[in-house]
Every structure is written in C-alpha cells, then in structure tokens.
Length: 142
Image (tube, rainbow, N blue to C red):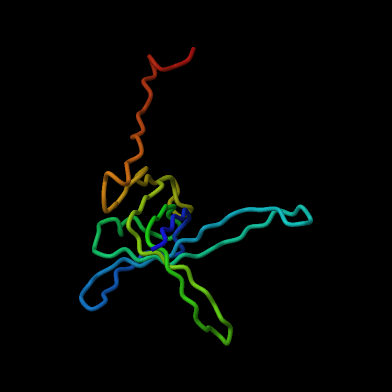
C-alpha cells in the first residue's frame, strides 16, 4: 500500500458516516501549490483529496471548513465517469491527522489548538514540541 502525506485546508466541515455499523469521519483536503507558467505568471494548482478516518473521535469538533491539516495514510485512486467525462479521484484512509492550528478565515481572533494528533501509534508520529511563552525578564536579547 502506498502512503500519502498531504497538507492543506478542509473544503467543508467533516461529517460522521456509517457503513455497515462501522463509523468513520469523512472530509476533503485541498492542497494548493504555486508555480510560474512559461510566461512567468504566478499560477496556483489545487488538488483535492477525499479522506476517511475510521472510528469516532472528538477531533471532529475541530474539523471545520478552512481548518489547516496534515493527513498521512493509505493512498488509493478511483477513476469514474461524471457528466460524460472520465475523472480521477485521490483517496486517503487516514492513519494520522494533525491540526495545524492558527486561525481559520471565518474564526477571527478565536483560538484553535496549536497542534493535535490522532495517530495510530504515538511512537510513529511524535508530537511537535509545545510552544512556551518566553519569560519577558530573562529571555529578551537586549
């Protein structure tokens, strides 16, 4: 099985679905990359990845449209016909999910957790170091 790792923003709020009694969280991630075309114009290309995370998890409370995430999991592709045209889809069965923190565009100044993970194996997916507020008296360079 190929492993996929993608960083991007959620295209819509995640939803909980049920397949034969097994619950999973479904969401899509938009990965956008910038490049310059032959004329030197800056362009963007967005790739959408459909993601499934099996099992219920409180992380769904944070998976809202625009949330920045990194997902790592098993890659699969699907070819299908839509509107008479052949289409290809990228799918990921999520094994690890990281919330990247920061404010979403619709969040204003509200706080969001800086980094949260729901990894299958904590030894495989180490947590990033926790941010520590500098001590104003001791840590100033002047």
